[in-house]
Image (tube, rainbow, N blue to C red; front, side, top):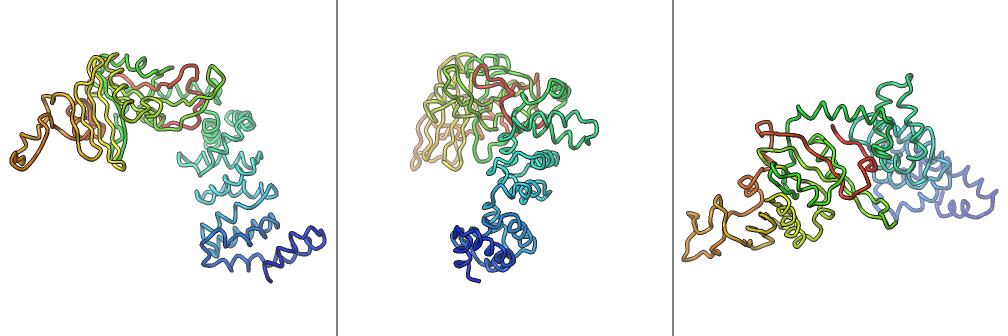
Length: 420
């Protein structure tokens, strides 16, 4: 069978001719799919995709069967499964419920594309979130897309005595993924707050090591309260370190502002006191802004509120390495490298000066008189706290705080779960 003539019949507009072509094509789909061996371009898949789209559910099942037999590759299956319409909504829901993460992701992609609101889709969403923290691709998008419709049903499932604990956990995670903490009822919110209070005194501090990139600030533990006003942080609440870091690294959201225009809002995490210092993590674009002038202005402003502030910025891919120390609103020492390193201000007492290095030969080597310690990774350990060295031996005092970068938003609007 020539696929060109089959497509002509399917797309002819003649009902009888198209119906006959559908019957003919149904039995030919397995042969068409086997003929895709070695095809690596989407353009070369297009004729078969047009046939599959016309056939609907039987073709969907045939693609899955060919995928199971490895007659089509994972890449081909992903392209082919993206062509079906609402006739296959139940097939997409069944695929979304598949325990295989990759297959489930294709199911959720279809549900999102079709905006399919169904009990089967809701059950697949609950099951995917019940398996653990790693959810299929587009599952969270589906939870947000259908949140208004799913919320009452998920809340009911949370209180269903006939539902298993696993299912009730999945329903709660799906609620959080779709609408954040605001989606929960008072009972669930109170339970989460109790769990956080129980966890806070017993957690072992661990922070991400800036292996490739990252930024953070450090302020004295005794004066850290000033950081909230200096950075414009609002609605702070106690949080564990793992939850605070996850939130600070999470997605930003768009919400209506006081003037009606949308504004971008994120979350910042202020750690417990670690060996006398509090570290600050959060969205760079919202807390700092301009990559260079913003760093200087931010660290000076925070130091004006806290007495001292330190800023660290690393980007191995871009070649940036920066550390800045400010006191009482003025930078006193900074190092910056984007290629050749540069220093400003007088060396600090702990720094190793380049001219004092045993390998420095004044006859052949050149160095500015204020050239000292290089690199944020080494400087942070002398100045305050090295995030990569925080662990069981670190002295901890108090608890961490999670705050929002704009007033009147609250924490409930941020979708997704946080590890407690």
